[in-house]
Length: 457
Image 1 (tube, rainbow, N blue to C red):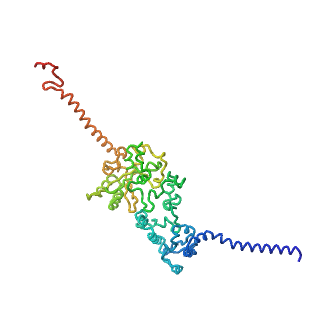
Image 2 (image 1 turned 180 degrees about the horizontal axis):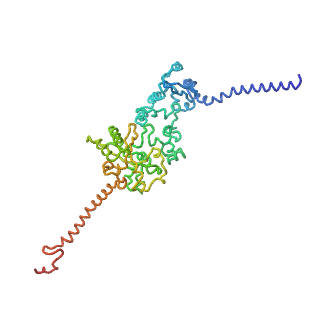
Image 3 (image 1 turned 120 degrees about the horizontal axis):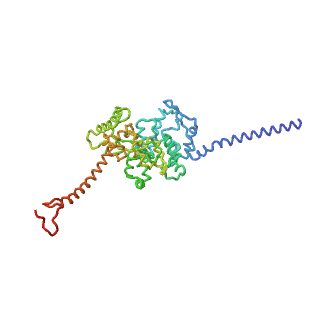
């Protein structure tokens, strides 16, 4: 064997041995690199939880349900290790699972929706106080109405990744899952921009106005004005510096109507009972629908609306159904596009003009079962007809509703009120100058000369 052959064999052996060392090294270190997050999570989890995650950490783990849908059974170990639920472990919520028979038990699940509602009851065991609040919310009302889109606990809080105070960050609010368009509008508003610039900003989030668990629409009661006053408690005093009748404006005009300057506006007349302006009686729904269907296709007219109110109040009971009017923006998206106060509408002509756009769009509404308003279109004449004097009396302001008859009537009333003292003063002057100065035998104003006798006959 010559030297060249020995040299080639030596290099081949070296390369072969080096390759073997490299393979062994990769075999030892790559699994460790790949498993670093899982191992880090496993260090903080109990042995029982690690047993569960041995299977459930797989993203491919699923279950076929009775309705044919597929339910993911994947649990990411790292978020769960940081979750507030780590302390109670898997069996804290899944106490019905038998670890011995779990693989072969084959639990029957009808659908993803039914399973979600079933697991919601598990939340009640530890969070009864919060659950009670949730049951008063619009979301719970949607569940009771059978809506498949109604959110429950696990829709807003991922049960295996609940991080304390995460929902207080603007980019983590769960509301955006269902309300994406409103969330996008909010991000562009002055409040959203303030929160984006600084996490320490005191600007409101969704839950600040709507509640975190007892979520309710702000259109009932005092409307958005009540929500805004939580932070802007001095808004009436601030507006009184330049706005006439500021308190009246806050009763009849929602804040976004002026502070969302690019929004379209409308007048909404909400049917409420006389004792509680936040609710409407159950009797309203059917007559209103029938009245709307019997209109001319352009929405409820003034005569139909008047007849409707007469029907609802025919019983003569203490509670009466009234109309509560408010100038507001046309869509929820526009209501969240609040601009800086320097851009807010401050020109009275925007509303108080002969052909104001806001008073050409009118709706009649009532509170639906879930708290949201059910709206019906109405003719603009419900605000401009003499028939509507009673129905819009709580909403009327001179020059503000386009009811010229009321404007003339009010002017006549003012003039009539002024006529009484003016007439009294005028008659007093005439009496003093033409009657008190008359003598029994003379003609007004003729008096005998001082110190002398009256003239001879």
